[in-house]
Length: 398
Ligand code: FES
Ligand SMILES: [Fe+2]
Image 1 (cartoon, rainbow, N blue to C red):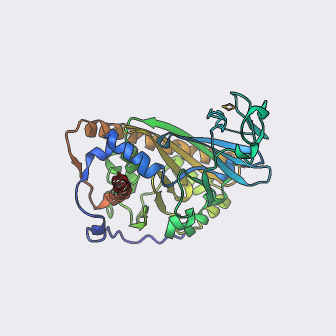
Image 2 (tube, rainbow, N blue to C red):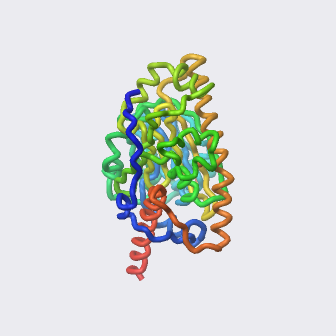
Image 3 (cartoon, rainbow, N blue to C red):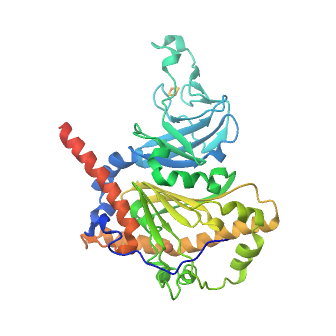
């Protein structure tokens, strides 16, 4: 790997002053009223990352994604014509949920209630005793949802998008297309639910301030004399999105045991080479509102945090791979990387829930972010700007 490790030069207060310095209202992290505003103002009005193209390998393959925060269920299908489309997973007859399976492959979709049957393009193909209805089959297609595939990632928008995904990603778009994730053919995932607000949970992944305290064993090695908190070497912002570039110590602590074995020896050279090909390859990227991607070469993973209520959310963590694990050592390396991530994550869980409990007590009115928690402030700013815009629209309509 040819990453030049610079001396650590921390981000300063001046660098991020444009984000503001005020305390952040704590209620945005526990209040059901604020959550209802987020539901309308954010999650029904933005692109949401919900899957990967490798899940739709053949014609008729489909995935179902429930987006509880928007009260929506979405069906994404590769049609017989190879076109990928997204629909509301709702029968047009009387609204029954059409598909219950998470994923599968089939030539048509029949509603369990009265057997209206739709093709892979969403058109109504047949319906029992249809002559007794007062409309044409052509009026009964499944309701489409705006969908785009970008860099292998599937995005849906439950409203009317003002811009496409590429434009929305701005300066991050190009780097994404060169990441291995764009060519991924396989993944492993795990999901978890946690008693915590989605932003609180998300923020835990976008600041390093806690590493040396919560992860002394697993994350601690990143904390060195030059950079005691393992802070990133820089932050980048593009519109509502943000990233941090992981800092590499010029005097790294030598890796030991299994970690060294996996990262230096077992991971096949071809896999390693394929993973070091983008300027994002040392970056943590946060796409608004609830998606993160770690571009780290040997631990390239994504997380989508789906809000369930003001104080509960569900995270889906995925590790993407190009090709199947061809050898025992490669399969071992993949398992090891997944297991070590779970270990680190297990350390976070309790502390995030403890944060939620404290906030929900109402004891503090505001929370305070320092310079090295700028990504957390940036997320709140972006959410709150959409909430305020929505409130102004509602006010105007009255
Ligand atoms: S509600 Fe689906 S066929 Fe009647
Ligand atoms: Fe952590």
